[in-house]
Image (cartoon, rainbow, N blue to C red):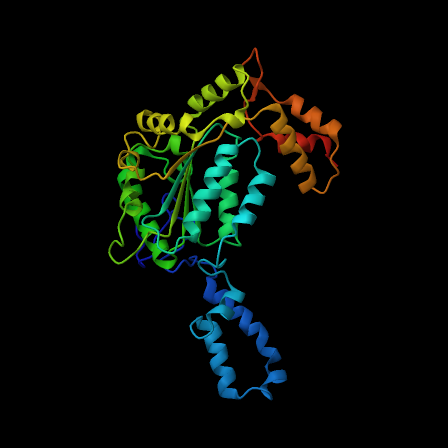
Length: 364
């Protein structure tokens, strides 16, 4: 529901932080306020430079910094700006994916080519839409975090990255009509403030059917809608829908003695879209987003094997500043549970609980 002051409230969060049309937080310090505080903090230094700078010039410079109009580059030194990283580095993105994401050759290729290609295109025809599918712990949330960090310094905490969790922000089926209105207002307001906004929708498999269709106009091939262009925005959907099909394909390859790296996107992309479209428990059930081919990539995340868990454990050890202890790596990996029951090929929780299990061995 729109607030009385014309700003948009995030769906389902009537009492939470609010970012309106200008991307500010209600009740908190917006970019201008943060910058003002920073500049005020410099004022005690003014006597040191006043002899070298004419008073009028100094006043104009400070005004320019405060407004971000005369000196926009200097303004962005004090506060986060829309599209602050002037260009996404394909090499840095690839390095992040290679060093942090394991067992997902398909996801790595699609994300690297899809995201870097979209960002480098000065005039995209439509927003980039990615639908990430797979079991819990396979890396879907982690990839959305990597994408956000490669576009904005603040990553998921950036004012221009917006995360929606179905069970938190859209809990009641009886309020779907209200949620649709709120969602449209929220997206319109934030894209008006920053064309390169990122919207992440988690738990799509738990979202009420029909709700996500509210954003269909924003994902279509329009130059603008009511004066707002959505063509540079990014929409990422995370879902467990289709995970069974992904597992079936991976298991077929394993049983036939083939390497998982031989699996091609064409082996499952169509099956994923059909599975999501026909799953009554999915937010994409009979969705116009799929029917109108508005999802650019259906990205499968394969179930992880024992060797991939050990990779996750090693990286987590290093991130905590510990030397890699292979004995502990093995012990943590062997505590995990695997499926199918007889063959024990894939971890049923991926790398999700690796981090808490590692705490047991480093409890001070």
